[in-house]
Length: 296
Image (cartoon, rainbow, N blue to C red; front, side, top):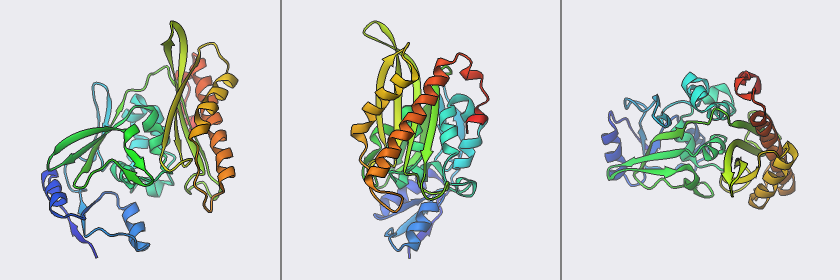
């Protein structure tokens, strides 16, 4: 059985992680408890960072919002600050499992788990989020798009602790949507999920719109892609362009939730739903003033 540690400061936690070679950070504990029950938890020491001051804060910054690793998913979902600064993130965090899980699971632990089916990375990918990693050797920042390096492997190095997730301010005029499709139950892992963000942009001297896509559960890691479409294009054209950009990246893992062909089909359905609704919101000048709670 692993030895449990409760450091009172981040420095103490980093020292423990450096001293104990097989140590694992204990955040919300939802994933750790599952791994322990399955008999696949091999950590010699668990470092509980829940008692360290400041790690559950949500703060506005000059560029967006900074979220501490011990912040619960539910706190992100319901935060007025997150809903104002980056509404897509709040929306996606609100789709994880169920309220009981969201009230326990932490932002840092969710990412550190590294599962390819996670919901939050789909939004964090399109929002240009970064992850702050701290160890006894210092602090470094990793773009979310470089964080998932392989199947259930992340960029977190031995001895490092996730100490913050930073999300840039979302363009108020941007259209965004999250689509999640499951086959067993609404609370289960998705067969496919897609977050879309549609913003304006310029390319070759002409006005265009950029569609950013974050995909979950459709490949061994969360996937990001983007494509530009003429600003006067219709929703069908936008969807076609997004599907063409996403399709080569879709490489589903078959399991009890469905086979490869089924998941590939659902992935494209999720892309279409996310892009179409994002495009329509971006195309509608009144979209920014809509009641976003209706779109949960």
